[in-house]
Length: 261
Image (spheres, rainbow, N blue to C red):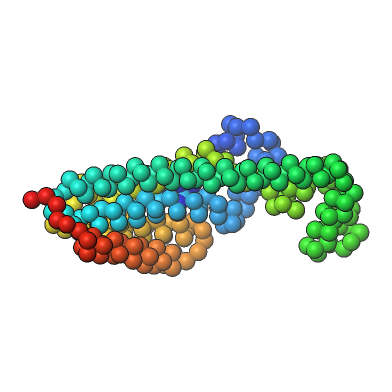
């Protein structure tokens, strides 16, 4: 979803300065951005690519499948529009449920960890020190680090180093749902417009040709943003996109009953 979590990234950026983020969170975010590590983009980049590509591929595949079995434009437009709306809502709902589940799991883990810290603080301190030893610190130094971090914020220390939960990456279900739906909608709007204006006799070819262009742009932008090979990104998405659309067209030809007349 490049477009999907392009919106997520923008919303998150605005939230950093106009929301309830602490000064420490803002400074951490700005430092991450100034260093320009590609890994900092992995979360929103994955979501954005998935949403936009899903919108392009799903809507195009539906349009191609119907076009292969139709001699009029109306069924193609109706199918593309239905797929566009249903896909966007489905993506938004699925993302909300998925991210909510992740949020519930993290909340439950934090509550459990908090209870363990209150019940057995010495054991939890030893456990935290062992984590630092495993990461390369000597035993004495690991214990000193554990003691200092525990004194500052015991739950935060355990959340980051034991559970892998970071306040900068906490799941936001509503934000993810809106971004996912918007990304799919934008991606799917492109093949829908093709279904409105492309010649009916060449609809399948037009849909495939334009979708490959859209996918190539999406793959190139995603590769550029992620610091990977642009050519590899374009070839990969176009290859699998061609397979998806080819199978759909084959099903349309195989089982389609010509409509209109």
